[in-house]
Each structure stands twice: as structure tokens, then as C-alpha cells.
Image 1 (cartoon, rainbow, N blue to C red):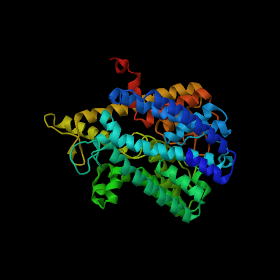
Image 2: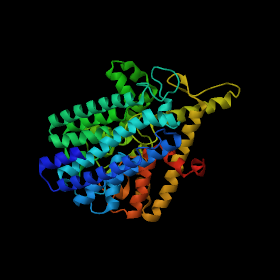
Image 3: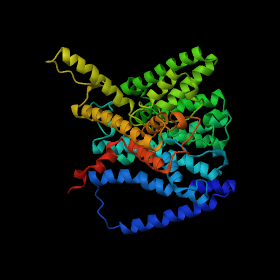
Image 4: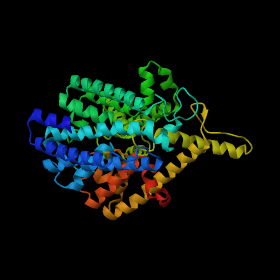
Length: 461
């Protein structure tokens, strides 16, 4: 909150006291917690780890809501919590109807919640979740054969430090390019925060459509793509080991899906609209990358496109970025393993005595990991189906319910119907906002991290 307070002081707006009060509350409560736990046992086992990981996002969202409530920018606590949870989970769904009317300090705080949440999920997915046996990074194999939870450094602390350097470097680079492209410095840094976090919060109600500049939009396209790429690959690329990235199977599929969907939508727009070639290509590429990386920016309203193109966009809701990126969703790596396992099952039917393991990056994938992926995929869609049915009891419109559930579970931002890219979540009933906030957390923490807390056996000694 300190940086947001500094921004508020620079612009001399009414949100200064909100950050002072919020910061004071955080310091007092934080100090009391530290004092109360100073003599507590420092060893953290799996059980404690699951609880801490899940509670961090809830606690951060609770205290992160204070500047909104105290400043009056978002008067109701439910709306403030929804906006903050959407920020820290890098979802990007919003309840704000007049973003430009907010003070600069609040806008900056809104952006930085996503930036901090984005790095938090990278460190979580690369360095922590694999230790619990549930991280998507169990599958990552760059130079060392076999799944390993930590490919950058043998120590979590060093891994986190290295990732922060990469994350910050990309953020600074994008900020400078957007500034050169015509954004104000304030808008540039806010959008760099939310791009690298694949969060999608904008300082403008029209999102990136506010800037029709092709240069600005292409810059954001490039950095959204980088943010949706495994950050470990970015590390190797920076070290000059480009072959590691180009040989990585997940990166190949990530690029293939992006280009494939872009080509389909591009052709559809050329046939069904009067867009020029460059405009059709840019809108297609932007919308595909913003959805597949779960960023959630908008330069066009895909709900006004022909239904078949809207359905292609909705299909992308269930892809997600690469494992080890700031993107949400199912993740490309899981989809690849799922497709390969399905293909190999057909081969096993033809050759029942043959041993045909699922291979990823030329290495066999442990059967337990394949089972984990299949379980994740099934549970993901079961949760999506059940949640959609539940949400229709709150919001009767089926299209909007499907879109709201899919976008919050996948941490994407815009959905379908009344929560599409040209709308927001303001009209959702309070109970619906709490339910969607839970789905954001559930999707952000890879399902199992949260679901395990509801298992009676988890709490047994």
C-alpha cells in the first residue's frame, strides 16, 4: 500500500487518508499476529502448507479491500472484496461502472494487486505446489529428464528471486514501450502491471479499446503472450538457451493453439464483417491471446461477432496459459497430456500387449501424474457444470451464468451475456459475487489446494 499512498500523494487526491488508515490497520493487526506467533513451531508440514496457501489469498483480499471501502470508491464490502479477490487472483472481473472517475491512488492499488498476485502464483506454481504433489510443474522437463518441482535453482528462495528479476524486467520493458507508444506514464505502468499478471484490469472503462493505436495493441499482445509462457522458459531464453524454449512441447502447443484459433477467427471476420485485413488480424490475435492467457483485456466485443466465432472464444475459456505462467485455466500442459493419453488409449486397444507410456518432451510421464491430470480435468468440468446450475438460481440467464462461472473459475475476466467484455459484474446479486469470488480462488489455486480442505480425512490427526 505504500507505493499506492505515494501515488495518491503525488496526485494530491482524496484517497490519501484511505491508504494511511488501511496501512495503519494492517500494521497493527500484522504486528499482533507476529507477536502472538513468535514462539510458535516454525516447521510447516503439508497440512499447514495447504491451509496457509489457501488462507493467504483470502486474508490478502480482506485487507486489500480496505482502501476501496474507506475511500468510498467501492462503498459496499461485498463489491470491494469481489474486486480485490479478482485482483489478487488475476481474474480481472470487475464491478466498476466508471473507472476513470476513481482517484489515481486507487487505480494504482487496483493494478498492483494483480501484479503482486501474478508473481505470487508463479512462485506458488513453480516452487511450492509441486512439493505438495499437485503442481502443474511436475510435468516440466527442460534439460533434466523426469518431473521436478524446481528447474531454476535448488532453493525456493533463489527461485523466487530469479523469477522476480524476470518479472520486473518484462514489466519495465513494457512500461517504456507503451509510454513511447502514446500512453501516459501512469497508464503505461498500470497496464504493464496487469499485462504481466495476465490480470486485465485497465485504467479505462473501454479497456484497451480506449487506445486504437496498433502499436500499443501489438505491444500488449507480445507481453500477454510472454506472460502466458512458462517463466522458466523465459529464464532459459534470457540466458541465451533459446533451444530449450523452442524444443519445449508445451510451448509448441501453446503457439499452435494461439495461431490456429487466430487463423479461424481471422477468416471468419473477413467473411462476415467489413474489417480490413490488418484490423481483422489484430482483433483476432488480440482476443485469442487475451483469452487463452486469461488476461481479459478487450479491443472488441466478441459477443457482436457471428455466433460460431463467439463459440470459438468460449472454447478458449477452458485452455489457459502454460504451467508456470501467470495465466489461469486448465493449462496447456494438462490439455496436451490429456490428448496424448486419449490417442495412446486407442493404440493400446489395437496393441493390448504393448507398453505405450505417455511421453512429454521425449520423456515418459509417470502414471500418477497422468491420473492427476485426468482427475483435475474431470473435477474441473464437474465443478463448472454444478456451479453453472447453482448460479442459474441466482441469475436465471443461462448464457450469462455459464459465462460468469467459466470466466471466474478460469481467472479470465469477461464472460458471456450480461458479463461480456462490454459489461461487468455490478448487477450480480451479493450472494452471487461471494460465490464467484470462491470460484476465483478455487481456479487460481489449482482446485485441489482448496478442495482438500473440505475433506474430513484432512483434519484427522
